[in-house]
Image (cartoon, rainbow, N blue to C red; front, side, top):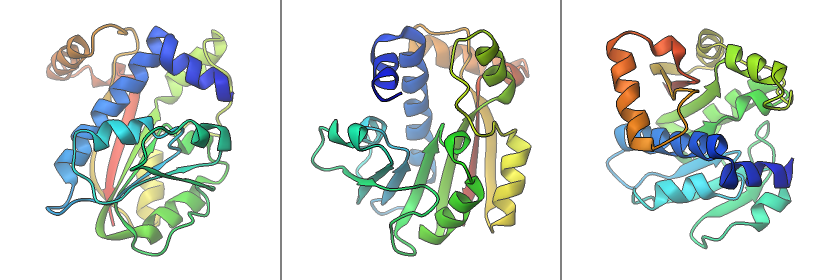
Length: 217
């Protein structure tokens, strides 16, 4: 899946759009919930660090770290200011209270035991630190698999309510939940953002492809 993911992100219109839309949403939430000082950020499932770089280019960060299991992806990193560490989300190789913000974008569905990750995220966050989780809506995932638009490589696709319940068990407090990204729109990002606002006004959020939850330690 190594080369396939990079190829989809770079050359496939829908894949490129989904990645850019997640980058934009991550930037917006980090800008909103970051502390007054330079935030230390961990991107879990960072691939080659491109999403982390897109955030770093727009927000002044303290520490910019990424966790990635795949050594091939790490070898593609091209920003010397980003530290990509090889390891598992179920056992984060960082000390207690190391980060202000943890980002997990389209990651939890790929983790065999996500409860371990939630515990670990709580451990390595500082007091009042924030965890941001993006996950595709289960209906769209199953639909895409049936149409053979994507591989069936998820351990579990979570509903937003399930994520919120699990995170609460491990001590997190929910700040906000939302849906974003329209699955049929793969054109200009600015057009997409406008359409999302319009859909929200019409209370059509349920049609959006991604779900997000932001929680606080």
